[in-house]
Image (tube, rainbow, N blue to C red; front, side):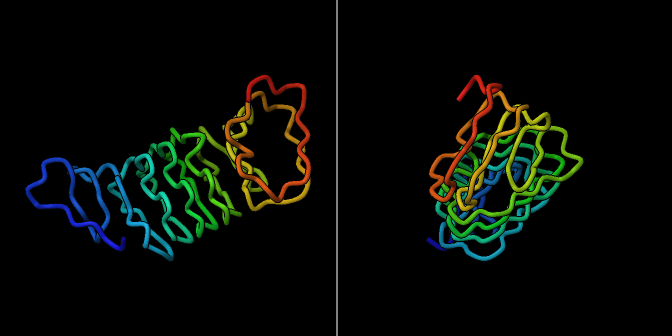
Amino acid sequence: LSKFTVDGQNSWYIDVDGVIYSKDKKQLVRCPNARDGIFTIPDYVEAISTSAFQYCKISEVKIPNSVKKINNNAFFNCNGLTSIYIPASVQELAGDALSACYSLETITVDQDNQYYVSEDNVLFDKNKTILYLYPINKGGEYTIPNTVTELGVAFDSNKYTTSITIPKSVVKM
């Protein structure tokens, strides 16, 4: 699927360059899965819907500072995605938003983001108490920091990591 076309009379959705948005353009609903290369989200978007980029072939997504929320499985199985930048504006990021992104290597979070942080391409909440994502493509051994109390889907589908050391601070998986 390379593009969506929404009838102009539709009360809920519109399409812009083959991508579906809510009528007010505040929510990116669905990107066609044949879309590849770098995708720049327009700066009028405030939320990325559940499964919006599911199975897309994009290699990089540029998220503007207008985006506040990234929903469940937003980038699920986006196998070409190698890097993602999370701007300061993101306040809600579903723990499984980047699940099954087999090529993801680089996770960068804007230093001014008040809710999330990336350390060595591992995604945490700002206080590093929740470990959200350890990239699937990252190999070797990993010792979870002692500040972490909760693991989301952090290590789902990870086949290259040989060993994970879980500290006594972790109480929820």
